[in-house]
Structures are given as structure tokens and as C-alpha cells.
Length: 137
Length: 130
Image (cartoon, rainbow over all chains, first blue to last red; front, side, top):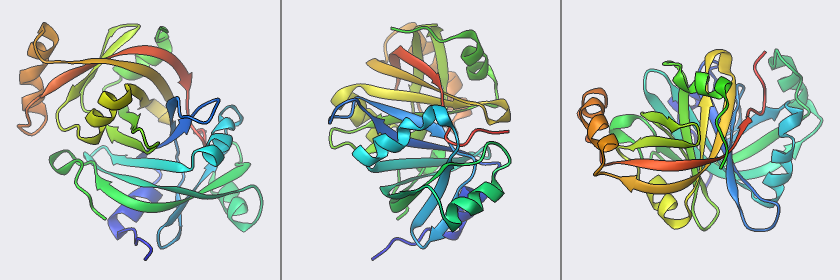
């Protein structure tokens, strides 16, 4: 059964002022050598357990190739009021054109995205200090 | 080892900047958490507090791979790839942080201070802020 992202987590993800970083794996061969941590400013909920975020930074385009090789992802979202969550999951697909990409082009004020990453969320953990590490779903 | 450039040091020093820590386990599952206390010991060496690190600590012991992410003013982001060195709970760094962390972190106790060497520093961000 698909995981349903709780309302409060959805709200935090879609708020532009929250801080969000995506962790993905990096390597020149088949074994992960290091972790990349990239900020994302715009996240959309596109299904019960699926989120999407754009890539508009040409210098970080290699992340898309890495994701095809290592599809596991983790996205941390944090509000300066010291509330946060970590969403773990897998790459569903990378879209380069279509309605979803167009919708992000409308949302993004800066450089327009050339790809949108879809992530299936499989687990959610608390990052709020007093309960950090506890599994939410 | 690599050196953290001045512009990234400035972002790390911003009181409002948000720092995150990414690790990976040996099955290739990334883990990203918030770091409450981070300090630049030298431009090639950093330290961060272990207050409630669970999976992160286990991952560091497994393979020592870690990346610090920092988001500063106007959401400009950088990543600092590091190699974990050790957990410290005996030296002056631990002692000097202990009381401050206890007061700031809702009475949670500092377990140790993680030390890491800087390997690579770069700008990071999938969708750049305007």
C-alpha cells in the first residue's frame, strides 16, 4: 500500500520558505563513493506518496545521471522553528517535458527547469530535536 | 584534503544558516539530518555535535562518508564532502561544547563531537534561487 504523506509534512514541503535538501549518491563506477546534498526550493505533491522537484541548475545536471544509477533518495525539510522531517524513497522517473515540467516552469522565478524528478516516498522520520530519528510513517 | 573557501566560511558563520548532514549506509541508502552545532576547526577540518545521531553515527562507523550541506542568506547553498575521522569525547573541544549544547538543545546531552576532514567543496542546488 502507498504511503500517504501527512498534511503537516505536505504543507512544509510546499512552503517556499522552508529549507529543503536532497541527498543522493555519487560515483564514477557502480559503488557509491560519496553523497551529494542539494538544496531544492520548490516541491510539489503529485500523488499520495509521490513528490516532485525541478532541476534547473546546469552545473548539477550530473545528479540526474547519478539517480538513474542509484535511485535511492532522501529529502530533509526543515523550518527554523526547529521542526523537520526526513523523507526517504526512490526515484520514480525523470521528466524532461510535459505538463508537470511546464507547471514547474510557471512556479520557478529563476532559471527555468529542464527536468523534474519524481520521488516515491517510502518512509518518513522526524527531525525535530526532541523526537529526532523517530519513524513517523 | 581541500580547503573551505572564504565565501563558504562566511555562510557557515551566518547565525541563520541551516546545516544538514548526509551519510550513506553500505546498502546505498542515503540519510539526511539537521546539524545543531557545527564548527570549523581549521579550513580543512570541521567538527559537529552528536546529540541524537542514530543512523548517522552507524553510517559513519560503516564507511566514514559524509557531506555537510549549508543553506545561507537568500538560500544560496554549498556542499562540503568530508571523510569522517573519529568521535571525540575526551579533549577540550568536547568539554568546551558540553554546557553550551546542554543549554541550547532543550537539556539534551552532548554525546561526542564528530571530527571530519574536508575533501571537496562546491556550490549545490538543483533549482537555484533567483
